[in-house]
Amino acid sequence: MKILLYGDLGTGKTTFTKGFIKNLLKDENLTVTSPTFALVRVYDNSVRIYHADLYRLSDPEEIPYVGLFEDNDGIYLIEWPERLEYYLPEEYLEIHLFYNSDNMEYRDIDIIPVGERYIDIFEKLKEELG
Image 1 (tube, helix red, strand yellow):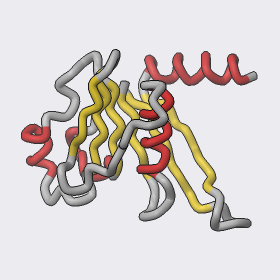
Image 2 (image 1 turned 180 degrees about the horizontal axis):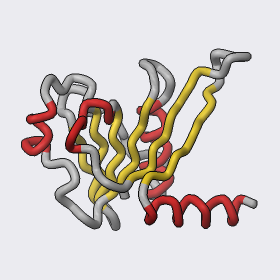
Image 3 (image 1 turned 45 degrees about the vertical axis):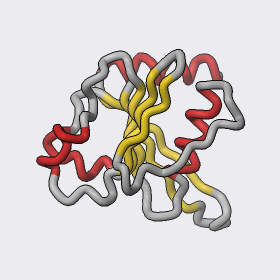
């Protein structure tokens, strides 16, 4: 699964990722930190989760050396996916985080599925949430 997180500085991309990882791994005590300087952190449990922060990436040609998208069974959460450029995967879930216009303490979120697989997942999720 590939989840691309878009948003300005401070809109909550890392906070979203922390909650996602802790919930998925069912470990509230897990320390999830931003991989800003390491570029990628891996959380290995029943499923391998890759948390990447590409903010400091200077050239998309560095992507192959980071090792993104090599694990077909892994879950990827990518902050600053704009840096992927031509390495953007064909299918993914795009999540946009925005400051709420009425209250800056809150965030608004848009979720956009890209590709047939993610459109199907998104439609099933919408049905379940009803």
